[in-house]
Image (cartoon, rainbow, N blue to C red; front, side):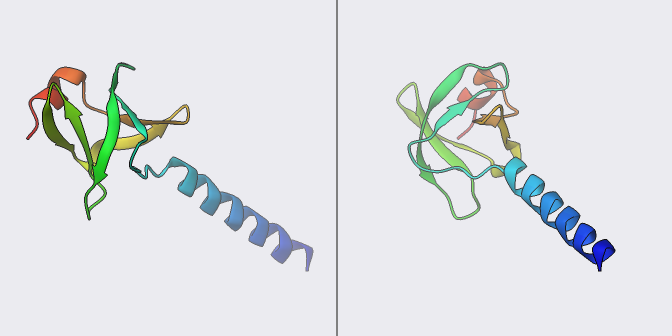
Length: 87
């Protein structure tokens, strides 16, 4: 009985850890570049989870595959200059 309880608790912990690392872009959340530079607030989230932000008056879509949560902040693995080149 004790082993099954421990296994259940470990499984729950692993599941919660995975969820904590998964980046979920939400409207209004600040997006940060890989070097820590603030890019701007998420304007819209696309169906695939990509974050759209307005940078220099231009709407850019930051791919969901580049997003993660670092120190509690929504972060892209791209630099600010790379994000500026996105469409």
